[in-house]
Length: 599
Image (cartoon, rainbow, N blue to C red; front, side):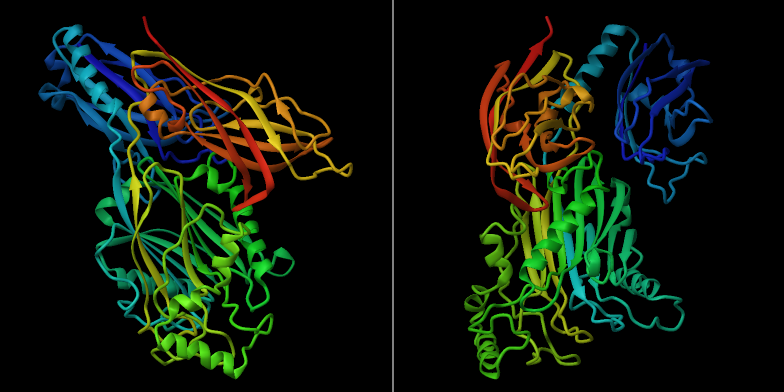
């Protein structure tokens, strides 16, 4: 008896104009064609399809070809990827795991076609076959042990000058699995052999990184650039690449300021890396805060499956760049240039290593403490000298035109149970071609493989919300009120109109009764521990709707313990959008998760 189970896929190519696919998997064994159902509009299909064949050992002297395709009702089905499995191996024990999809020639290519999860077992009788698969299933039910990915993140305002070929003072070679490099003001006359600056910059980094690393993805917006390098032997684990840009310059169209982002998955862990260049000058604090919000709102419309706030849909976010926050030292106020006395005092404090005193007047720290920007983000301690504004061709000397400042920053946000650990934070002070010194950090980031999609002892999992109320929502209409409603979203259940509440008219303090129950398509509580319920709060207009904000509920907070079937727990969260809290708006309610067992 041969048992084949086609479970799921991740990181598939987008075949349709909506940026998604309608994938199915097919194979032929013993001249019999087999096919899973088609899962519409997804790059992460869950098929969980099981096939049984009466077969002898001699029938396994073959290779089995699994093809994943996109179903097209009006044309030829698009090829997404394939894998070949030597069935003879199953005589030595079950085959199970994730397999990288290849092109039609059976080769890996630059398209990063994603991975498919299958299980194959062979035994003389069906009972033994089921037992062998049960052992695999049981292992995969809880096989989500957290591992860690060490990520190097670097940011540098290049100062519109060619970089040196030796970047060792900033980027250590051959140490980390993933390198993320962000640059600003990276526009200079390309050197001999290059047609443009972007080509020059990427080649400089590629040559420096060496043959052990591969450029995974790069994206530019005017003079801002971001790129990802990974160890070649680990590169197949990086899938689901998406890019986005958002200009915040003059008229919010000119791209001299703004952000550029790349999102990616490492197996089942999602990342969003954002590189930004915010408004300059001492007095532009509020504009910088606004830039951050605009960047995050803008890329939220492009990245991710759910197209909601980036803080709601990625396990980890890293925000880097020349953020341009300055020091409010003394009575400089909004003046671009400090007085000679102020400048000399700050330089003296830097030379005397009184950095903590200076950092107390850092604009970004002050704005974060007041909840005006980067709510929920963290950053390390900048126990090194300010990286701006330095004289070029000098190891470390500041120009009196501006206050010395920590303009170059790296922050992070995480939704996983385990926290990101910062292993290092520093600056490349020996690089002297710009008026900024490059900054870097090393982040130890928790990553995981999701466990099996289904626990065969579970018949259904239901999530119910009750007693949901909002308080102090912002005014959205001319009457000083709003017409709010809720939209429930997540990756563990299909989106549909039934997930939207009724509209509560003319109120800033709505009460939502009779919210729809959610039937989870994931029937393994261990897997649901990695899932999040997103609640979007919106205002209904005559024709369109406006998003007020979001809150995120990690399901691990609400899942019942193993020996129980039901758990009820209250929540109360501030409403957030674009990295800031929406005034004093709050949402609260009660979540009940019921796990029904078979039999």
